[in-house]
Image (cartoon, rainbow, N blue to C red; front, top):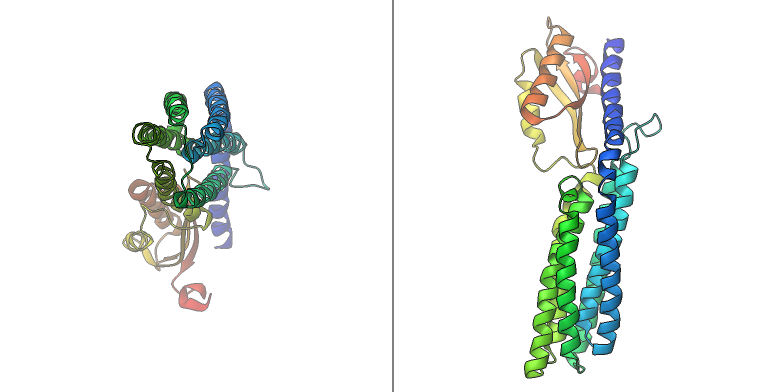
Length: 316
């Protein structure tokens, strides 16, 4: 019995190593998109500098808000790209699950930074609503229009990579939201130019901050769930427990743990009680085949027990 259990634990561990090597194999494929990420970062940094200078000259906090958002996007791309490269490193005995969670950590850093920036901008906008300063609407409109074009280009550059990575996808979505932000800033500048409505600038800034914050809080939830070892949102542990119990030869199940290793891999471990007279290897093979076929779970580890074992009786 002990040798049998050890064998299955070793098999699951080896499976984890193979995933790590698979990520490393994709390194060359992902490397072909390096110039796209570099171009997106460069355009965002240039745009950020232009908008900050223009915002100071024009006295527009909305333009500076848009600049901070563009800066956060550039930093997000840099962090996400670095994490993506780290995640490609193969697994080894000291890091048996590989480096896939580097991307999850990067996503958490990006969203946390963006939340802090939005809170600061919201505070600055609220202060300006008390006594709105004059704003040079023409400068605001011109720079926001340039930002709209560049954000569209940046989103196009990262579109292909966004399908494979949580971080790049977040950066891509941020660039799309930047395009909406730039439109809002253009509206703000036009309102100042046409009707001298100074409240438009801080109000638009506040709306931008609230909108981005809402987006951040929605996107950060799955990131936190992975880091907290939560079960994937699309899998119900109770349903999995029920289906395992229905497999022929299974007498019971306990100590079930289901969690995400990273964005692409999910792991399950449990103590499986095999009915008397049943072949352990065959029952285990049935359970694993069912989990792979019905739930897409290929990384599973089981401690196999008999109904009379101490642990099956609730002593462990």
